[in-house]
Image (cartoon, rainbow, N blue to C red; front, top):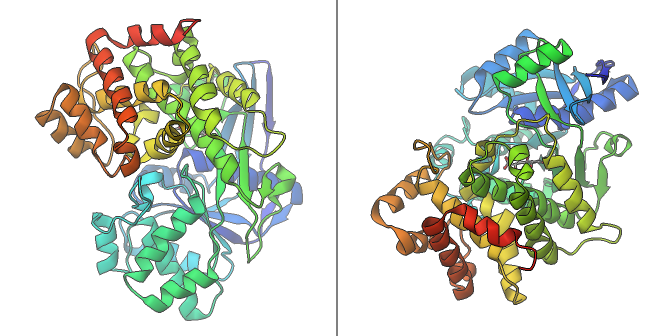
Length: 486
Ligand code: CS2
């Protein structure tokens, strides 16, 4: 390891100004890094962080407390160049998953006047919205619980709502809610979740939220694989970093935020954050080009026998396939501000995917497909069909997803399908086979928007891909995509 650099955490946090829900690897390697850089630059700051986990990872919270909230982020440009950054801006770590005292502590922290921003990375499913329509899923057990017990909420929208209720009751102005999950119009979606839940409980509160709470949207980007024993061992051996709360990520990082923070915000732009009026073009670009490619690599790559993103893009056939998807099925659906060249963006993405110092597991990306597919593939596919264009790459992706959700991978034992709809998938797999299985999937209204589901050319393309996939295997399909004169 030749060119490595260490950046210690300096500066003094005066108070906690931001509460974050979802203390996962992504938050620690993205938002916390921007706040630490802000603190290092200014020497002191009112933008200290309190971060909480709502359901998973109690052990991480305990670990962080033992370390007084300090941990390291290893940013890999490649195998040779890594920056090891110390983070000290996280002043409080909470585990609110079991209700009780820590949930109360979290709610009090959110209700405190010093808290001016609440950020979230609770994954797509954490908002309890239907992935295809964006409407609140009232039948979701967590939402049902929060309707019955609004003051001891379990869902992210329920917690935000209870904190806002307390602020309103105490005459404290509303904090700004900043969603940092990979959803289209993510601010608007979060507003929808919180407002719909409020409307079921208290009309006056719902109205106050409508008028007083800002929900700016933002686009976040950094590849941060889940940590495993191999990554910890590498940190110890290569960087002498013995830290069980450490995170490994790529050196690239991007954050584009809609500039609407009524109670103020850190001067993020100094740290390279793009503050804009309308984040939608950036968000759609990232969801369809980066995340869309990721999901294709996950389902098609796993079928082709690969384990990681790096391994998958090193397979020339898959690299070609992704290039085609980006140029023929993602880029034509995007309308970008001047100065953004999508072919350069696409090339850079492939170079990022080829970073061999990250062990980004395809199985991690394959999780929660039902929540991810609409924004990554399906909204774009609708647009392409309207323009009379083909959707072959997307159709292969959907066929591979159906395969992944219903059958073991070739030559492998059965795997766990980690998805809120896994029971539905198992039921479909038990009752239908072949073309009728494809029909049952395409009829899932939670995932497929009605117009797309009813589109004959769409259904045909997926049926064709699935038939070839099950008859001839993934290799034969990838071969067609890699052919130069296709
Ligand atoms: C990935 C994302 O797991 C996934 O579904 O596509 O986590 C991706 O790595 C990030 O959005 C990159 O910014």
